[in-house]
Structure formats: structure tokens, C-alpha cells
Image (cartoon, rainbow, N blue to C red; front, top):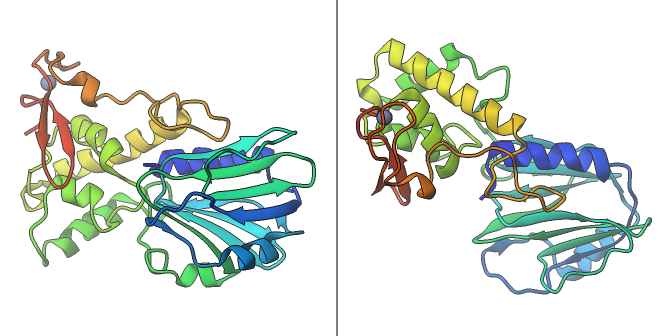
Length: 276
Ligand SMILES: [Zn+2]
């Protein structure tokens, strides 16, 4: 699944390569997929996209906003899979969930794995969508300060009990983070996924905050994770510190074997000595 660094990489590449192009024709998928969320019929999507121009894309959390001017915004949310640019003469792929063909013969295709939103809104209405409206600050935004982060933890302590992994991956508490990048954040912070957030000292909150910022920045600088593809169908340059390949191998800090546990709906990779 794309997380914040992969979406930021895709937006940058769309702005380099696709922005300013005029859409000759747009189509929703030929490949039925019950977990792709559309808000338009095939006919509406074709009629509303033809002749529009791609504006400057931007990202919030795991949502990618691509203006189709005048008047519309194409929204990709919580997708994985591939969002690809095709050089002219672009050929329609065998399977796709969304296709935009441009007047110059190039094209953009999207094919998600698992699930994802591919929706077209009248400009402004995309901000009313569930999960977009009221989104909390994301780690790359100026509002994501340590004071904000500390206040977020204090606010959560009044509700249900949460662990570090829950803080990082559930309910868009920190929008844009997901199970993949969370592993490296927890490793950098020296915190176990099951550790209750109520346990954290202020110094540990600071360490965790710094780990979030450092990991997100490193993944953005690398152009996203190596296990996802960018707009040009290349793997990202950010290699995860802890992933399936690390299991049983020595921890980079202390040489203890890395372990895998199942927790909160997914695998966690951790050093049982460094992460407590
Ligand atoms: Zn270790």
C-alpha cells in the first residue's frame, strides 16, 4: 500500500511529467474489483474528464489530489498497486481501474491492489469526503509540531487504551503512516509495538516524534519504499530497516536476531532487545 512518502513521490512526478496535459479521454476500469471505490459511472467519468487539463497535484496523508481543470479534482485514496505514466504512443493496459489518455499520446493508468478510492469531485467537494474532512495534521505539515504530537497523545489517553502501533497505524491518528513505515519508526524510537502510549515519558514522546519525522523524511528523500513502484514503474529507493527479509538476521544496533510477531492486523518486525 502507498503511504505518505510514496504518495508524495507520485505527486512530485505527476507535477513534473503530467501537469499541463490535456485529457483526450478518460475511462474507469475494465477489471471489476469490488474494493475499488468509484463515485461516478463509466459514462459520467468519460464525459467529465474529456478536454480537462491536469493541474498541480498535492497530497494529504494517504490521499492524492489531482485537479482536472476547470472545475474538478481526481482523488486517489488509500490505494496500493501501480499509478503509472505511459509515454507515447501509450497502449491501454490489459487490466486497469482508471485510465486517462492525453492529447499528446501519453497516458496515466491506475491499478490498485487490495482496495482504494478513485473518485472525481467537483472542485471543493473532495474536501467533504469522509477521511479527508477533518484530517489531522500529517508529519510533513507545519502543524505537526512536538507540542501538537504531545497534545495528541494526551487527548488519546482520555479514550480507549492504545499501543504505539495503534497510534502509528490506526484511525488516521497520524495520517499517511501505515504498517510498513511504522516498523522503521518503532525501531528508530526503540519502542515495542505493544508498548502502551500511556507509558511514554516526555523524553520518549520526543524520541518517537523525532523518529516519525526522520523516517518519513528519509523515505521521501529516497523516492518511496523499494517495495512499491513510482510513476515510471521503478521501485523506490528507500530500503526498510525492518521487513520480512530482516527476520532472523542480526539487529543493526545490537546483533540480536530480528523477530516477527502478528499484532493489530499485520506483521511486526522488531528487535526484542532494542525495542521495549
Ligand atoms: Zn537490537
